[in-house]
Picture 1 (cartoon, rainbow, N blue to C red):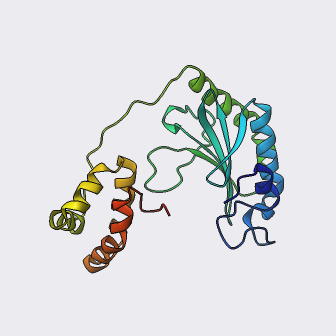
Picture 2: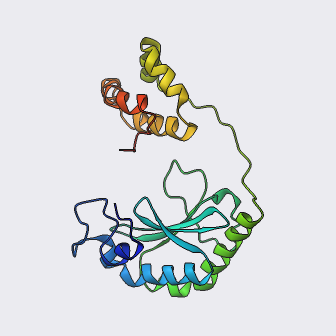
Length: 206
């Protein structure tokens, strides 16, 4: 992954084989991505690179991150549970996302049209950071698939490691396993995940 912010806007994130090729998603959305960058820096945010993407921070807290994909590019907000969304432009990133946390774009020109709204949303998020406002934690009980329950019962080391994972990492395994239709597929995945769980990683972490 890249570590230099300029590389993202000229070459891509470095997370796949399309890096620094004409097929990289950042090439298609280059004007829109640069427009988003200008709005974020003009708002007074600090620009850095995290997870191979431009991430914008304020008052010691992540505020927003830019991403590019084949069919869209987006500005995603951290602490989305706090955002009021008066212009109704925030969307959920997927069916397992609890809060609407991103503004997606399918045309480069959309950024300029939404400049005022984007700037307002960034300012709102920055104010939360300055005042150390955080969303209320909602404790939800995680329902484990039967196959994972059986695997944990039969493997004390795995059970201890899974229990030590953060709630988010535990959830990543549950989501992945629940996406498999057959029990044997879920058991097979658990076997492949064992070393990751022991290492304290989530399902999507390398």
